[in-house]
Length: 128
Image 1 (cartoon, rainbow, N blue to C red):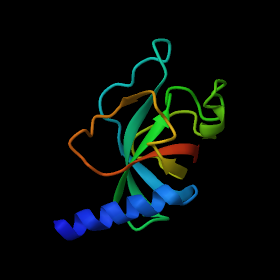
Image 2: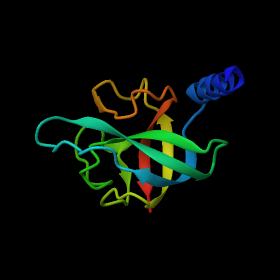
Image 3: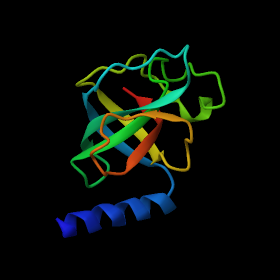
């Protein structure tokens, strides 16, 4: 348990000082219901099974306003919402470009994985 925690902390620390990373993953589930975008802007956290790119089995990935197709976001987060995914669906395979969530988003976060202490990433680009 302690070894696993140290590995996670080390990976998070290394990632915090590195640039964006590329990961191929499968969206395992969409927990709960995503709020509509007419109320407020938010990041919604999804769980991905890692296929390639980093040494982890699963990661938690935040996506800015996921009800808006990637590449169609027109506000201040447009540069962190790139890609060609029009809709997020469970079991879909995506190519993700990730940065740490902390330090890249300070607004509302919809996160059903509150018991999971894994680091959160922000997907700045999501492609099919």
